[in-house]
Image 1 (cartoon, rainbow, N blue to C red):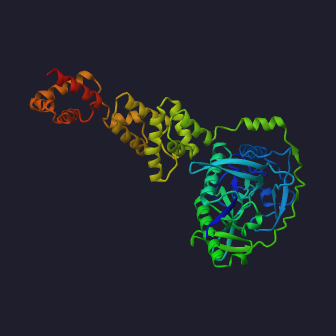
Image 2: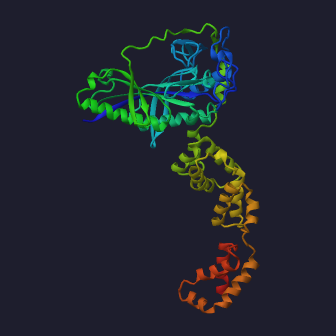
Length: 484
């Protein structure tokens, strides 16, 4: 039997582009040393009061605008009451749907495998992150560096029908957070986490009727997009197996976790009843009105996003869909490309350098483009050396690798490696004449249709140690043969 899948996402992304945490003066930055970046308010010490970070609210509103959400007239914060060791206050300052969060009821388009998809956004809200816990064999530790970091939670409607669609949306959102300077969105720093809701139904049933859908299973705190894909596919297979064995109807609504070691979802707890968090408006943060002028200034700051750059690269620069997609996937790569083009580089040749050579080097060495010595100006200089005939195309790749490995300027390397091409007509012509004089029999063979031309080119290259301009050399050889 065939089945339909219903998938909803709750994406958590830390706002990294603010100086301080959302309600305290502690620095908002990733720290390796545990508990080195905290203030009394982060630890819920008596007598401390939260102060709202206006920049964090601005970032949250910017994300809401990009997602096409309805904006609130006032900003409220609420207390979500529950106990957990990494939540020292015993509650989390957050936003619930009533009063309205920073964004609600949006409609957003994204691309999956070249096809446009649409997802309904239930809401996006700003809250404080909890501390982080590390669990060992017989004890656990808590790191409060993360406590109070501004966190955006994005809740979608269950509009995804495959793991590919869910991951494509998450990748699009990561791109938006990066391009809009809201967050680094780096999963390696724990800045992105995701909860996934999965249920199935028979494919011939009407999906608009909620009664036809199966029991929803929530998978908590998946920390990578690859993990999201694997968790969804595993859970789909698990639920189908239960359905076909007749045990599906006995399954209760539940929360599970993704275990990377066993590559499976593991039962955590049942969700027969919704948890009562006893929300109420945070009494220490008065509501404040959003002025139309401030909202318009935020909207004006929304930069060119990945989707817009991709459209520009295809329609204006003539790049293929594949190359444009590769370049815009990471903001730093796209910025590198943009800067190279602004210097005057050919748009297609610059794209080829990035997609074929530079990205290959980054992947091989498992580093990011911001970590390499090469700059857009250096890449342009290498391209210009080829265009001016000072080095060959083959030599240019060697120069690039030396720039990356030796951390030296391109022009200096060309001199040190003795690579500069000979493009002087008289110098090359003198060598060509000498080669032809030494091999008159091969000139006759050439006229009879035999392939001796490459031999002549090779001899000139040998005499110049590969420095003769190849195209100019070929042109002069033809001229000199015609003279004889």
